[in-house]
Image 1 (cartoon, rainbow, N blue to C red):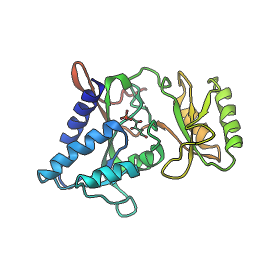
Image 2: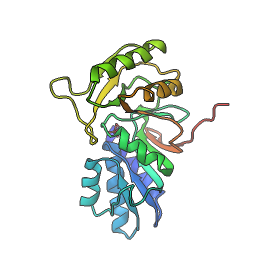
Image 3: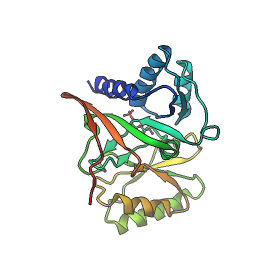
Image 4: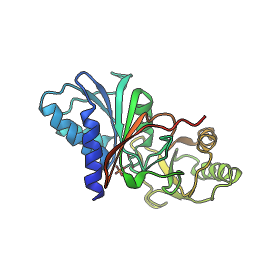
Length: 233
Ligand SMILES: O=C(CO)[C@H](O)[C@H](O)COP(=O)(O)O
């Protein structure tokens, strides 16, 4: 069922794409439904160019005939469409379950708009049930882990950090980095946590996407809903 919802959200986002758009193309199973929907529209004559957020997405998109470029060739994009692991009512996201958070964030930040596509199981009141991915440089891993634990302690968050893939065969991102997944349960101060994490030298990025998503299409049993960020005053 969740695959059907992912497809519905992805198909809806593909309808928003118009000829001439420069697109950021996300990573993950929901984003792959979007790539297929976009390819169908390209087959019908839609003229777009895309920047993929991972090698995996690049392979799929080019195999389906979507014209691709790089952010160096095209540093400003109109729209990014990507999945998420969690989204809250302000459209703050946790991303990086598929390990592509760094490129995804760079691409989203270079885009005028970002549409999130998700099935309704990803919607939460408070982020944190999904482990927060923190991308780190392999050099000095233990020192970086200690620095992150200090931040978690200062913010009263659980000290649960797990090296993705395990220490024998750690998962490597497209950029050659490792990921520490932080099991935080409830992230109440996302901005503060984000600021403290990026201030650690060995941290490359984290999966909190703040003020990047402009709209979400969330599909569930009652159809595809459009979600706009609730403004907190
Ligand atoms: O952030 C991501 C990859 O880094 C994905 O967008 C996120 O993990 C959601 O994936 P899926 O659509 O497969 O549930």
